[in-house]
Image (cartoon, rainbow, N blue to C red; front, side, top):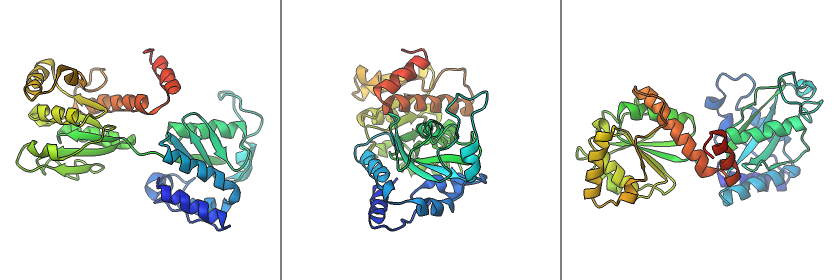
Length: 330
């Protein structure tokens, strides 16, 4: 989400103009995101734009403030394809009771919602609407296709977490695909262009080091909020990967490998000047444990752990406490 886009929309609405909304600004409406979904398309943004007026300024202003303050928040959209059905449908025997009406009305709606479940919109919503609006915090919504006549989508107002994959191994290729699919910004680093290819890493930024080794890795910089997965081919450059991650003080670093190999990596890391407390920050072996063996299975274990770390990093103390309790870790 671009902060300048919100400013432009606010200015247009203030002047009584219909703003221009594009799929580039709101990728949840892109052709790629809506492919195969007959209920929503990029053209619907024109309908959304035509429905906006000065009453919606507060929604976009709240979204802009969330971006300025680094808040975990979303800008959501109610997409109506059958107005009468959107209002008329009611809960069934399985769903929790949210009242005797469906949506509050049959019109599209732009709304703001954050991790604290605070919602802002230009019109009153029904209990059913609120239930589905809150679900955008589960990215973009868990029950968007639950009721007839309408659907829901959203865009995050925060940046994706960057994941560095050090090494273009087969496991790394599998991790890249899964990590991108669940919303991470993926960057893979290796020295061999035959492995760091677009066909192996179509959804990742690719960095090719020269010299046939990882000596140039130090020239690459990571942020303290980044995650690092040390997955070098044959584990040959795992020490360099761990040292780089620790020197950049990234939020998370994990390394794949058995205890014997990791002991040798430890010796090399210590020889390079790393302290034991730094080494203890390396999750080893990387990934959740459930018996994964193949590259694809290992990728599931690794990305599952990345999702868990991201949840704990991003969400409020209250949300984290509920998360930990639900996993039996409180």
